[in-house]
Length: 243
Image: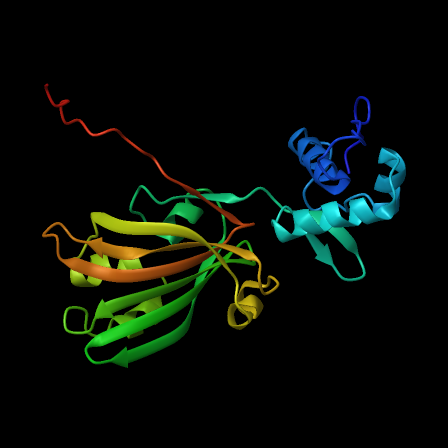
């Protein structure tokens, strides 16, 4: 842990804001200032209680809130730790998740979990592992008529977009995407290594090629503590209506 600098922030006891909420806000500020380092033990609850002059109860609740939000994580028998900064995935630009992570010098692996063919469609479920830690679950649905044998090819090469481009000459050029916040189910908690009920960022939609034909229907569950989604927005260039 980095040495604390400056005066310990004060709590306002007569404030209508609960002490644990004030503590959470102060701790987040100290994290942003770099007073705590990722991967190193967070100060014990008793130490924080003495530091802020409060009982253990509001400290424990503040810590629980930050754990629930994915800012902190706990390791049984070792303590509480600050997560590494989240990886940023730019969903406004169509690119391979594998390639985008590797361009940043990160080790990434896409593990095929399930391959199921039914009624002319193949569903592929993959687990994205970045630097040895699960980052997201990717589910893709593609036409077996248009992409015969794609499951076998994906097993050999790993990157879906690489397979689509090299083996089938297909490049996705646009996507209709909806992003929402969800919760991790018991089914997925073991795969993602997070508690059931933890926050997820969910992106789902369809990609299209240059002929505007559907390429892939996708559903991605990102760990909210590991991934941040970047959305670039532009105002339409249409001229304003007169009158």
